[in-house]
Amino acid sequence: MHDIATNELGILLVLAFVIFVSPYFAKITKIPIAPIEIIFGIILGYFGFIGQSATFKLVAEVGFFYLMFLAGTEIDIRALIKTDKQVLRLALLYISILYIVAGIAGVWSNAIFLTFVVVPVMSVGVLSTLFKEYGKNEPWLNTAMIAGGIGEVISIALLTLMSAYIEFGSSAELFSSIYYLILFIALCVLGFKGLEILFWWYPNIKIMLMPHDDKAEKDIRLSMALFFSTVAVMIYLNLEIVLGAFIAGSFIATFFNHKKDLPHKLGSFGFGFLVPIFFVYIGTTVDLGYLFMPGVLDNAIKLMIFMTIVRVAASLIFIKRFGLYDSILFGLSLSMPLTLLVAVATVAYNAGNIPKELYFAFIIASIFEVIISMVLIKFTNYLKFRLK
Image 1: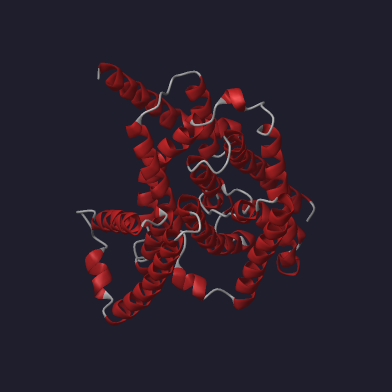
Image 2: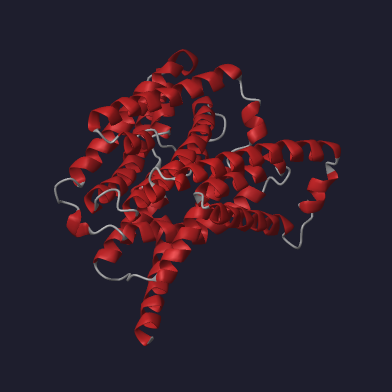
């Protein structure tokens, strides 16, 4: 019992150190904080500064679900519906191209389901950080958020199906999971429509639930109640929790956009506390001793190059609308699916569907993609203004 307590105490102290110093390392290296935290986890875990702990793992999982909740708060469904139809068509065409290429690559590699989920996977978690640097007036970035949001919903749905297939195979439980998934999505659509009508007729209800002058932090309380309630429903239905967390976040963004500071408040709590724990934990699951084993580093580099080239090549469909440089920036900004690539790898590995070497390759590829894409975005943006 004493050893367990000592281990937990050691993990707390190391986490305190990493959470505090990561922003400074990110500023020095010009690398986003998330990869820095994963790298810290890899190094500190390898040298034994962070041990294994059930509590650590549980809090890390909560951090991941909360990250998906925050990703959902970036997606305003009503604004998405009102998007320029041509932009929406191009975004859907872009996503379709990725899945077509993934399907072809899957047939060629004899791993069609995993390839179909991995290659086109999208996540707006890291993408949203680009707004801090490039602002909200860049058409390529705003369109990337639209395409990324749609792509993330599709990716999460496929992750849910993959998780069910890995767990149940082609048994009746799989079809039961698909039925519950369709039912849940249908209920969400009906819920959105119902609340849209309710809030249209009685707009004061929104103000009552989340008042402007809010000394009791009702906005945070309602957000957390919605987050935990949705997680509970997904656990009960035996569906992938990330889908429910994401939809809960989009509910907040869609119906409570009068609270302009709410996403910042929710993000400050998440990115300052829960989310770093998740990224550090992911790092601790990677054994540096495996890094130079056959099938790890080489597969990570191949996966990174392939996913990036496919996305940038597909983004050229926007060339008439954005021009060459902004089209490339669009493709690069969607080449950082860090969180969901990690999620896919974790689900597949925990179920014994992929070997440890491939799991490490996915994690390393997710880190490389963020670093390389960020560097290329800066370089492409520099060329765009330099050659004007």
